[in-house]
Length: 122
Image (cartoon, rainbow, N blue to C red; front, side, top):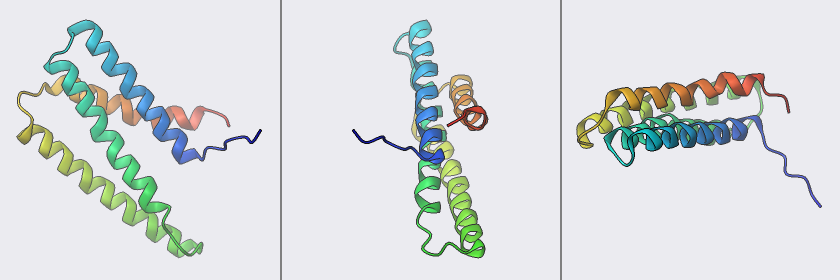
């Protein structure tokens, strides 16, 4: 039986998805299917989607020279930042009503998973 090896980036994405699930489930448990629960899910997705973009974009580098790796990182990070801004803009202009506190709480909790992932051992 073969062992599945997950890269650090994929582990972070899985951890982020788990955080989104737990926090959104918490809001569902307290508030039911409400604006708060929907906003919590949206906040988590605003963190997860750009992270997925970053992993995809930074892994497309053809050359493994330090210069090309740094260039790929900066391009991926710039795209991630732009995508995050667009998603926040869309959330506040296109989704109505939206609750800011659950949205930002889940967004911050999802981003915090980067720090937790650094503490986890392989």
